[in-house]
Image (tube, rainbow, N blue to C red):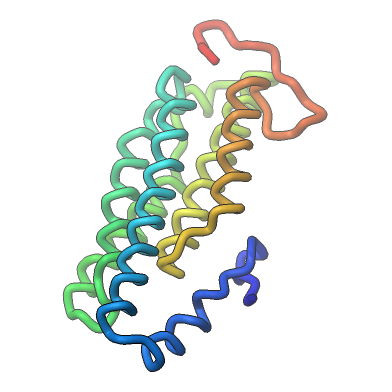
Length: 179
């Protein structure tokens, strides 16, 4: 088991796939690869769909929704493209730009907020950044990371229920913000 460089769960497929390519019939090898790619797509969808549910009714964070759609499509295109294919030089920059758009996102509401409202929005943005990073991990290794995905979805639940990512803090609901 090789620990992912993010510090998240171990990913044994990084070492197992090259071995399988030489020990399995080619049809079986590709079938197992396509299954893992499909599972990776499923996890990317689960993360993006959950983030959309969390942020769709939060003034100041709903602007992330089109950015999530961009990272989903760019990430999936990156996963399904062979790194030796020349088209990767067009796909990879699109994925990087989609990640950076989330990284540098700031809304007017965030700039104008203070106190509990600012903490609530900052935790939401922190959740978005974590989701973006996990999608980056999934795209990079091209295999599912079920424990990491499950933990992230739990964090989405915590934020939606309490308004915070930290278990010791519970933000007071903000006017006009549905949770």
